[in-house]
Image (tube, rainbow, N blue to C red; front, side, top):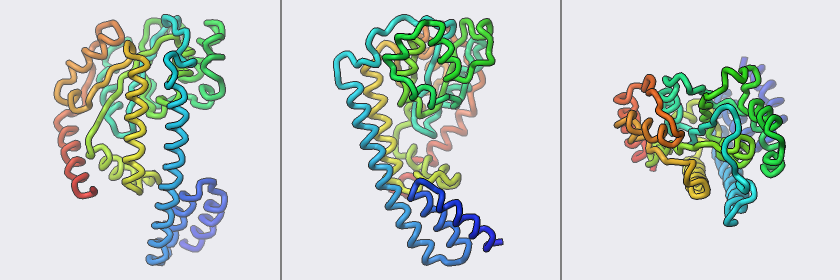
Amino acid sequence: MIDRLATRMKDVVRDQPVPSRAQFMRANLLAHQGKIAEAARVFKEANAAKHSEISAEVTAESHSWQGTWDTPNPPPLAGRRPGDMPFEVLLLLGPTRSGKSSVEQALAGDPSVLPRYEAINFGLLRAHGPEDLARLPTEERGGLLRQALYLSRVTQDQLAGRIVVCTNPNLVHVVPALLALVGRLNIVWIDRGGPGHMADIFASDYVDGNFYAYDIDNITSYLSAYAKRMSELMKALPDQAIRVAFADFLNDPAAQIGRIAALVGRPLVQGGVPDAAAARRHCAYTEDLARHLL
């Protein structure tokens, strides 16, 4: 069995375009073969490679983002207009494991809310410049928006007056394109905060095999870059964005849903809130875990 796995893994590793991921796969295979010392060496090399990849990615993203927002009236946000779609868009933004799904679950109790979870067509949004999208006729923009949110099978009547909620953490990179399509959107930054967030990502994603989570420094860099981007985004769109601390949501969900209702300009019926006591215990556990990791 191990020999067959080794043959297959060699093909996978050879075709793997990300160097660190190929090394992680090789380390796992070596461990299965009982070559623990060699596996540990390759695993250490893979961590170093991944750290370099993440650093380069964060640097490139930071430069790109800074260029977008440095000017007083950034081109992707120029000429903003009132929303002219039959539905509204609400983005719940925050890094992975920040609590967005819990807030979305609470919002989903309102019949006007249409949760889309993390479904988003990034390829479509990145294929067009925000300025080009903003110049399109309303009907054409509406069609692209529905494709981007995977709403093509939902009728106009079903969408009329709805609030479409999206929680994909990578939406933070395509806000200008979405804004160009919809005219106006609202943003809620779900801020987990604290070292416990880092520990939660490490513990959960390590088990799930998400490779960036093997290095605590990488996770910290990711969280810092995301917080910086959200701060800049809120500064650029002060009337369309609020920050909700996840701890505040757990302590008083009704109050935070009220703040979101004020942002979208309509009352919202609070739906089923996940077990807040269990969530608070989990947050306390991850804060304690962080003390051992750092």
